[in-house]
Image (cartoon, rainbow, N blue to C red; front, side, top):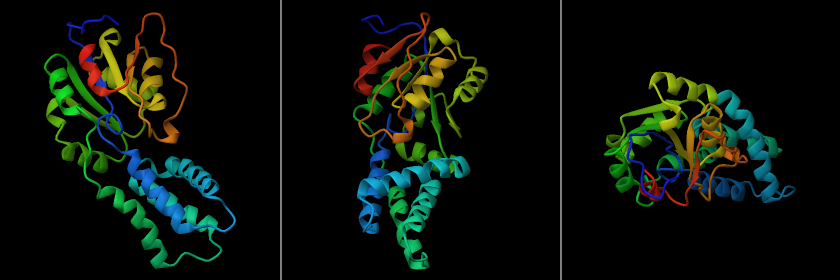
Length: 236
């Protein structure tokens, strides 16, 4: 990458959760509360967490991403661990851990709004996030960031097929298109796989299911790794 910002118009596909605003920290807090509530006598907290992670993997295949899927995972994990049948009261308590996530205030990451304002005056910005449509739509509305984007796409999964669809819908030119996000699995690797450029901005609390080794770009691609979102202003 050149030391000075790119002056030619680029298309920047930008992730939302844990790139523009905090997300996974709230799930981690809910998991900690759930594990404390379970207080299992035979399984350590780490073992309970691993069981929950296994259930989450299964739940995503059936229910997709988001709070509904997460809530079902908590209930099923409790059922697997408990020798007693779950009562309506217990069911409500366990679902409450997930419901608390929806009540959290929107917490933008540092300098996100000012950086988007700067970038939107120079390039075409498209928000690309995955998850349940109503849930992600509410987040976008609450964030107040929608005005900086030419479009917003909420997809069920961020895999090569989804990026191919984006490429066709928005007539993306690979040489001038960048996917920006915190997830190797959903943001960086699939976009590189179809020939786009990418900007990896790691987040300390990226969800475990988004962890992957970051792929290496091909000779005609670019991969940029930045410590924080605001540094995009130095490159674009």
